[in-house]
Image 1 (cartoon, rainbow, N blue to C red):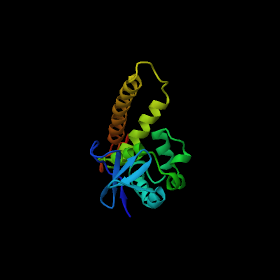
Image 2 (cartoon, rainbow, N blue to C red):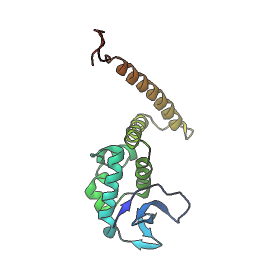
Image 3 (spheres, rainbow, N blue to C red):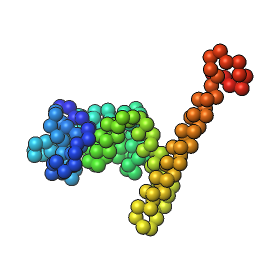
Image 4 (cartoon, rainbow, N blue to C red):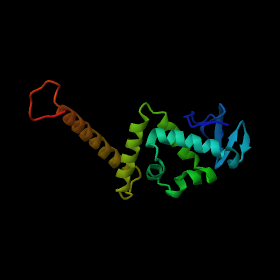
Length: 171
């Protein structure tokens, strides 16, 4: 039994499609997994699920992904431990998040960005007018990306070109 957490177009299935199980769409209705309309007991897919979560989360958040996953999702850290996932699974929306992030062209960079946005959101109290928090976070995130890009460019410019006699820089 093999599970791949991969993005699947929404609306094609009754429930939340999180990937595939042996090539067939794996769909959750509430917290119950289904393949081809057949209900699956969590205990029957638990090992395959933890392997799939480990593969996707490692691509996005690194090998020690449990705490970062909790930070990004806002879930309790215990909920994101391998043993707890093996026993209870994860909400389908977390599996979709991992599938989408792991499918990114730059999954590790996506992981860093997810953590950065979660960090920025964590410091902001909920504001009135709904999406205002998202707008503030987006503005701050864009400014930080620009600052970080400038710092990387500056730092790399400080390296001495091989053969250079410039005493101000070093490789």
